[in-house]
Amino acid sequence: MNQAWGLRQMFPALAALRTRDAHVSEHLRADQATGLNQGVARPRSRAITVAGGKGGVGKSTVAVNLGMALSMAGHRTMLLDADMGLANVDVLLGLTPARHIGHLLDGTCTLAELIVTAPHGLQIVPAGSGARRLAQLSNPEHAAVIRAFDELPLPPEYLLVDTAAGVSDSVAMFAAAADDVILVVCDEPASLTDAYALIKVLSRDFGVRRYRVVANMVRHAGEAKHLFEKLSRVSDRFLDVSLDFMGLIPHDEYLRRAIRRQCAVVDAAPGSRSGQAFKQLAGAVDNWGKPEYPNHDRIAFFGGQAAMEPDLEGMGWAR
Image (cartoon, rainbow, N blue to C red; front, side, top):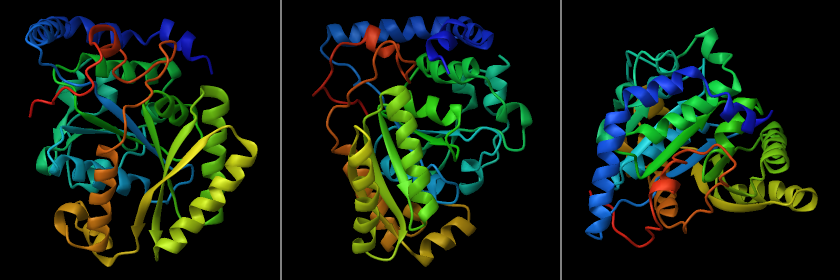
């Protein structure tokens, strides 16, 4: 896979998106220039990919609840369902979007027009389910989706990207385009082997060196630490990467009930063990240091911001 080639051969729909939103972008740049002259500006958006290697580890549940927890904490948060063709974020939240990523790529709507608002202001960018075309997107089309976020009139503070299972080109491309990668694992041998395979591909082919690990569906902290240590030992031995233990999500009947009710447990049962765990994860994200932004030769979410925004560390977010 040659991402540089994909960027040069950008899907034609992206050109249409840029043309349709040109007037919005000009207004945005003018507003930013005015804000900078007055000493006030937004910090750069932070893109976080939630990946899992293996299906069934609860990756989408983690992405939905983490996004909801960040939104409930007052952060402008967006969640991109990047499981093209098998999307389920909308199902987990009981939403019925009228359009999906396919309409963006066809040039029939902008990214801003795709957004569906969930409870507490969490913004969802839906992908289609059961659409063969979306399941077979090319690398230039994936690149077009990533670059479309440059055109948002009001970018989020946090963008969570819920990827598909496996080690496909789409998973690797979305993960490599983010500032951070959260890796969800559970107590299954295949979960750890597939997580290791994903780390190997991302580190070897895309230079992604740091991963935040969440142990999902565990019984206690000891089990979570054991899972992390098993993955960390083999990664430390064979790969040049850094793994950080981010936290755990316990087995919780309240979480199962929330999934059946198509809502986030952090909203439906905030005092439950899982609800509290997701709040702790959101707090951890908010306390991360400044990210090591992707290299300029890599396709990246909000890559255009680097060209038009200065270093805004320490400047406040207008809420």
